[in-house]
Each structure stands twice: as structure tokens, then as C-alpha cells.
Length: 119
Image 1 (cartoon, rainbow, N blue to C red):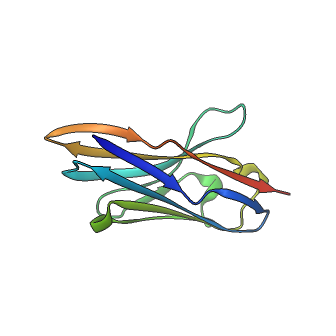
Image 2 (cartoon, rainbow, N blue to C red):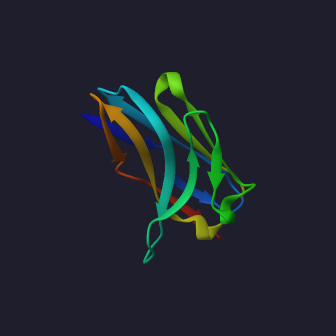
């Protein structure tokens, strides 16, 4: 069984910074791509950023230049450094990972961490 646990969310003023972490644990053979998604109040879940196993990154336009995704493969951990935060970044942030467990590929989600940006 695999678990993804996010941490690092909280309340911050506009212009501030937060760093989210996502730790994967369990009977993991390998982790392929990972990503951060978010879901704001009354909105659909949207992709924020992704990172492949060779650390190729991709960002949604609204966070380019402000957010940085990274991963520590040896620790099965992913991060999202968020700078110059805006009220519209307020959302629940979810970690996602494509993981091979016992030869079976699966897509896993964390429980989410709340990020609130006040104006």
C-alpha cells in the first residue's frame, strides 16, 4: 500500500511564500512523474506543476516564475516552493504520483493541504 502525505500549507499574506512537501511511503518500486494539483472554492481541480523522474518540469501559466517544483528521488519526496503568492492561489493543494508497486502501475493522491492567501 502507498501513502502520499502533504504538508506545509497554511495562511500567508499576499506576496508571501510557502513550501509544500509531499512524502510517498509504502512498498514502492519506483516513482515516475509527480505533480501538484489544486482546487479552489467552487472550482474544478487543476494542474499546477509536474515533474518527471529525470526532473523535467512543467507549470500552468498562472504560476510560472513564482512556483518551483522539485523532487528528492532518494527520499521519495516532492516539493513546491511558492513565492509571490496571490489571493487567487488560495486552494487545497494535492500531491499526485504515478508509482509502480509490485510491478503494477498506479496513480496515487494525497489528502490535500490548505493554502490560504489573504489580501
